[in-house]
Image 1 (cartoon, rainbow, N blue to C red):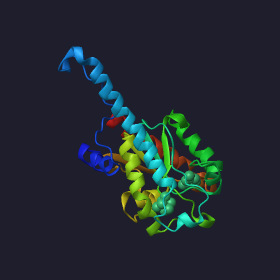
Image 2: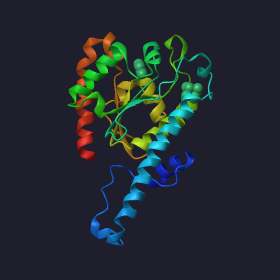
Image 3: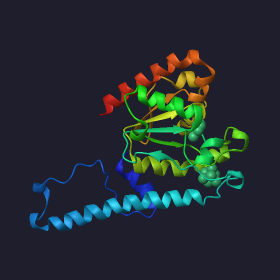
Image 4: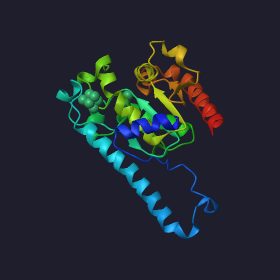
Length: 235
Ligand code: URA
Ligand code: SF4
């Protein structure tokens, strides 16, 4: 994501200054006045604070959100979980019943399989940041409709801006369609490096689908290998 886009999202959240935590620390030789180190330190700390604050603010906005009709039936919102400085961001569809109860994305059986997919890539669940396109559970776990998807999209874009991952996995058809603004079949979206705000996006099968169709697990592994290849090219 380029800096101007990131700034746009962060400014919308009332954040004036943006410094990625991944940004290399300022070299000592670059400091204007080396004796001013404490001031530099203070500035750096205040920037870190503003990132913490922006996460808190965003999470609060989501928890109180009434932008779409799902707010009328939800129990609690499911914001997202994981490493806020992650290289990998995984985006699913919407919380299900169990996720809503626990307040976490990808719980239960599909969560277990997602964790296996993450481990297959040599990562732990805590290493990545996981969220959904839609933060409230649709009644009867129906697919979120277009209005719900678009109402919630701004929150996701802000989460992407804050994490600033090196790669995004769109988990399943709904997430892929919403994130990439396309209706192309999943089979055509797989194996291609898409982009959202200059960040590569790889589409993978949803674990819930894989649970129904174990033969597709091999394709899932191919998708993950493809994602690893794209990630390594990005690094
Ligand atoms: N749970 C989630 O949080 N997201 C999904 O897409 C499916 C189950
Ligand atoms: Fe707000 Fe998103 Fe929940 Fe709709 S789904 S009420 S937009 S948080």
